[in-house]
Image 1 (tube, rainbow, N blue to C red):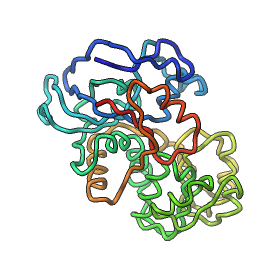
Image 2: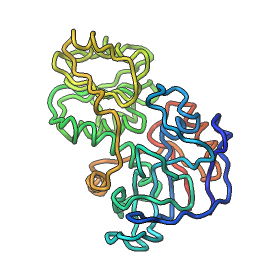
Image 3: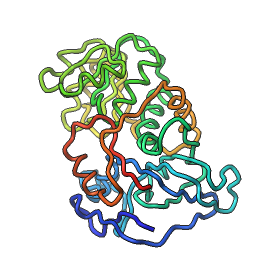
Image 4: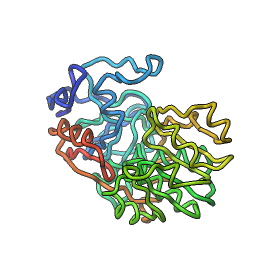
Length: 318
């Protein structure tokens, strides 16, 4: 089969299209003929060897590697003990996350429990864009935090993959006001998704523009993340998606709950089935920033490094 592999960690050019052996599903696994694969931040973290991760959080992955965890396609075979899936079923999945997966390929093996049925009303490109970002937003906001709406909800990085999904979920959950934080070029896009107010972070800091928020979901993180704390009211919830410096002592002083315990999304076919229902009836939509052929995975990663995405980057396999 054709697949994109890396033989050394580094810049996008290490991603090479090659012919490799087709995998075989083991017990409890399903072989999927991949039609499209989503591109996510963990993909370029892996491509770089997780160089910016603290040593205790750095996976011991060694080349050669096929990366990629978001797939949409058709069941091509099943392993022993798999009764819920049949050849020809259209499926999508976040595969084996956190952990190694091999989605940048014509065929991929997934645990049967990671799979959900692809909604018939969306394309494989749209389905491949969905798993990681929708599961992250759903698991953080709905399932773990059990956000019930009310008050002001702030989404930092609202035009990006996770951000534009989170914006729609807090709107659906009943937030009284949804504040989208992004660069100015994205205002029309995030307002089309339901944002009530827009903050251009290149002109105004979040803490200057927003006060007394009940929920803030930060998809950016980094060393300056603590500057978001004053935007929340006492008892407010800050949910980080990526690692950041949230100054625990300062957060306690302000009475802000920083939920670093929620930051890792996990594969779940049952959770993705819930998301599939939202996608099927139009309550949730996944925006696609750009599409690249599988052979041009390096170009897709270069696009990611440019930043300022509106939604997701997807690799078209078939």
